[in-house]
Length: 191
Image (cartoon, rainbow, N blue to C red; front, side, top):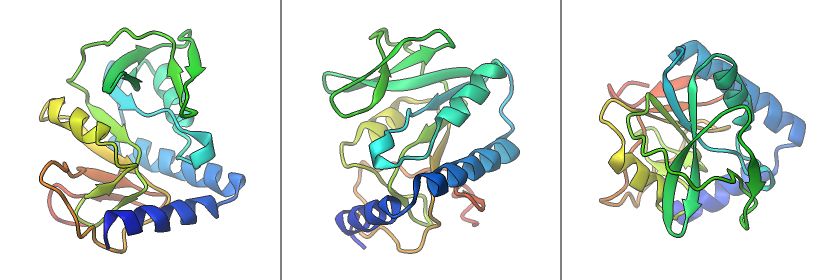
């Protein structure tokens, strides 16, 4: 299927989830992530802050866990047309931007790119790790600038079914997909 079709289909599927279903699925995704990757103290995780109106995976669960376990947390912020990476702490002040995204008030880019993990928002990911996001390309840009050792991880309520037919030259596939039921690795070509 084409990205536009997948974007529409999975936006509808996500909208059909009740708030309770979305939260329980988010908890399962979080538990699968922790069990599979077992992040350690001082590791660096870049994680998106969810947009509640889009029923994105509740990554606040992840953020609270990471901060409580001394895992360094970075979140994205769009400044102009650039995505910057801001390190956050328990006391970091957030505000909601024009897109309904909660972002740190600070515009101070950490300059960090050697993340252990980048937890990526998406609407869909196929069995090859090709992701369908919102079409702005911010994460492809981020992926071009992170270290080669960074694990690029998508989180999604739904398992892959269809393939993305219109993968572009600049699309960078994920290394892993975490769903409520499993973790898929695209590094070895195995599911």
